[in-house]
Length: 359
Length: 267
Image 1 (tube, rainbow over the protein chains, first blue to last red):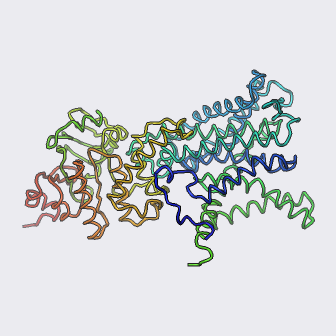
Image 2: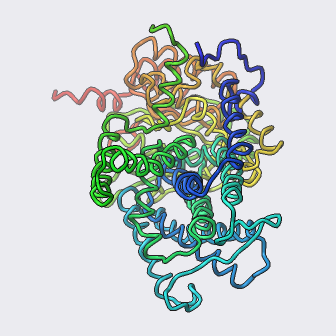
Image 3: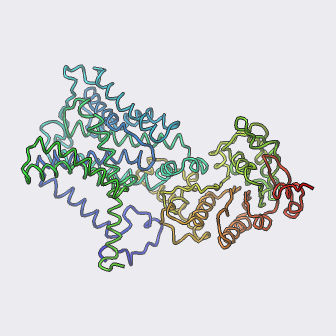
């Protein structure tokens, strides 16, 4: 009864093909955007920024990127960490060579550079599929991290091997560096994430997205109806890498400020968690990318709150438990709802349509 | 070769000409020296016992397999080196013996994939979803809705095809091929595993497509009743060789064909 589409007739194909075809969805989305843009910036503090909101936004972007490649185009990738590192180091190098360039442009160029790298590492996908491709992308993860560690040019020959962001401003307000206020970094990430999410959704609901899904579901049939496998797979690698590259650039420049490549872009800190995000959230679902990112970012915080603050365990013990519970939840999740949180949400919507009548 | 070439051929003239086609996988000879031609606008059937090379023949026609020797002539142009993508661009659509739908996508999206080759907007325009892209989407949606109406698929428009029953999946697959608006439609056992009513429906669809849209149809089918009823001409394969061809009534009385299907008696 709450969530019913009765009476909402679509009289054109255009309105039927809208991103939010239902009035309820439109209202919910507008409310969310209102809160995100006009309320949160005024109440945000450093804890919410650093611990929850900014990492959530950045990992949402990375999850969308990986979801395009794995969820929509069916090409499994374990190289997310490597590609995020490409985005981060591109940003760093461009910042060094062009001190006056606008940070937004720097980040988008870093995305494009990552897209180019993604195409190169996507080439094996033409010959190999599934687990074998996953192993090939794993190689890209290790190669890229090794490269950024081994070649001093990438970190400007600093002694520690660390790269540190310098201060950049948007409209006179610093968005990177230690001085950046919480609301500025948050809004900067939010604008990028919202814009790029809409772009991704548009791609998915038009020709490009259908080509990707055709390749994912049945590549032979896709070829027969005229979808070129080479171009389609590489376009998925390119666009996915662009998103992951932008996420990597934000992760370095806006979120952490200073990184050391083997630590920050490790397979265990980035590649697997982002893959978990899209599995938990829902493969091939935009909403799933956000839900998965929210789940993975907030779970450790929730568990810590539960174990340290409520039960009174020591922080070290809690940390050990956290990893165990994390693994356990993954397993339970995959058994109970293999299609992820996005599927749970659509089941809930289906139930709400009928509530309170149980037929 | 392009779609225009196939369109230009008048009805009743040869659209595809296959000459001495042989296809071998290592030592296995799938096809040996098969020649036949398909006339534009007809319903042409390829029949034969299991393993006769019928599906291989279709795969050769739409470029999925390259013939070991022999020539294929499309609309007066030699196309022995056909690629599936080129075949699709030239106006050849096909369905598969084992349904090859995009299982995770809805019926509507499956049919929309049939329009992919005709959508011209580049990906930046798609990402921004500007006017031309929206207009193009609407145009193709309208074409696809016509196919949906024709095949009675309205009620399953939004259903993921993986969850549809077999008969409907076959129909959606035909719909996807029709959405391509092909000049030549290759159907690989469109009625396999169907009951009588479903076969009647499918035969009706095939004949309507042939009559109304003048689409040339090449079909493989095992149900002899259906084949004899709906096809204009038939070619019979056995062990990769052509053993007969002609009108249905000629095939019905062909000694070699009867032997291939029923076996040769000892006396």
